[in-house]
Length: 246
Image 1 (cartoon, one colour):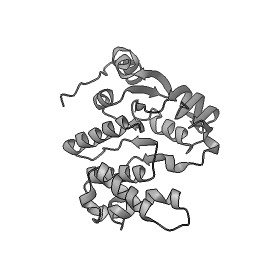
Image 2: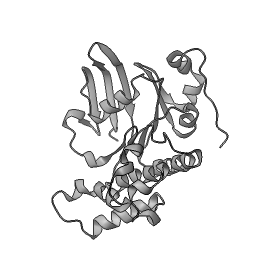
Image 3: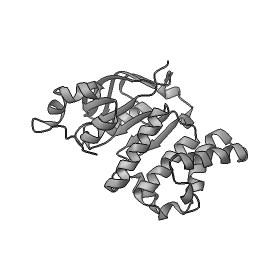
């Protein structure tokens, strides 16, 4: 199968400041990759490079087998950025209208038809917020809004979910339910790339870990990450993985 993301010797700087240096990694179809690293380590920059938001200074990036600079199938990617839950708080749209936006890549300049409406209904059911479909997005809790964003990605028939600290400001109970949803979607074959500051959650949920602090200190399965020295090298000698009991 064609890899979802393939990066080789990728370097990117903001002016004179290097953000990502000589990173090589591959994300295969069906992977659940956790991106971890201290604040300012380049995690969001690396994700943006994967998605073509930034152009690397050097190196090669392919997305679904296509050079990322030439990739035009945006509907295959569902992206939830940092702070999107807060920014959407005043959006004057219903949940259904927000999720319907995920169909626009398929519809183009055409009319919304029954197939599009079915896709929206199925996505709302999958993330368990069908009962909130006619509520204003601004009236939802942070956890409910995140589910609406995931539903929009599902309605677009996304193959990749890219999530940048999606549970910031979300209560613990809603966060656990949200990650259970991600587990279920991953089991259904959707590839997930997740940036999350809680390393214990990442090692519990993700099957692969990329540990970054400008350079890549580890890229492999979660068990090998826990057993490696990557955490100490990237974060400093006082860091350790905390196991969660839930």
